[in-house]
Length: 122
Image 1 (tube, one colour):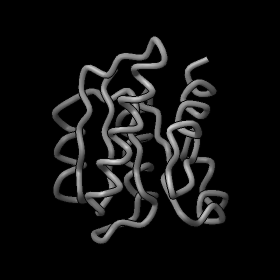
Image 2 (cartoon, one colour; image 1 turned 180 degrees about the vertical axis):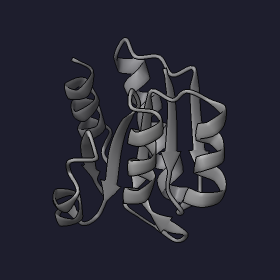
Image 3 (cartoon, helix red, strand yellow; image 1 turned 135 degrees about the vertical axis):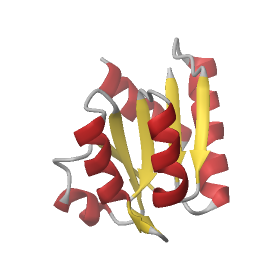
């Protein structure tokens, strides 16, 4: 499985990556690739064009664009890719839940991530 974490805060990306590794050790989920991107326009779009990701976890609010726009782009160009919103503001997710497969509330817990991914992959 290939995953891409998009957030403009390095600490959040590292925590998310660690949570995915914990999930991987607990379940029969294996991530061949765990990529990170700090920006929507420069990094995430470039990485998406080079690889088929199974799942993208993106902050809704990025410094150089909205994760909402990234999600729309992914659903349009890569319809098989699951997109999870990452946000401190669940009401933002609720406004746009039609373009996301699920959401995670910051701060992130590995338990919540595990629960959400199990729900998605069943």
